[in-house]
Length: 124
Image (cartoon, rainbow, N blue to C red; front, side):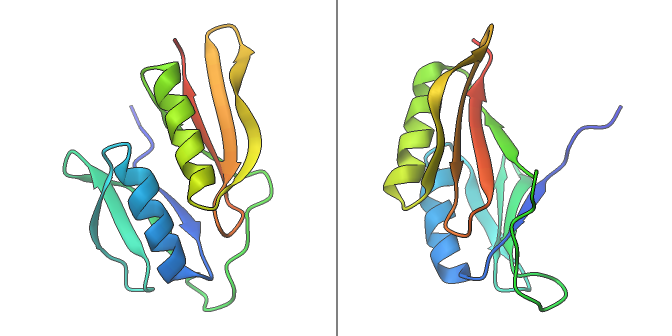
């Protein structure tokens, strides 16, 4: 059985992105683990890395993946609301206010400082 081990987003503003993600992910208990060789940062939870913000490997500008999105699962709707609000407070942009999208699927959408699309959701 396979499980998703981690995801990455590219940034052209790594110092600002690290500040954004330190605060956003830290609010959900996901901490910086170590610096990535690109100048980015690797984040983890429970001793395992799960999220990475980095510069593009080929040295070209990082671009947003059209159709790409990463979701952060939470236990409660209140946690989804708080994570979404925190992202906007930190300079992210709204892509869909928190709300029920399907039965028992409570979701919110936002973009980071570089335009990468993220989701916060719960199935409660």
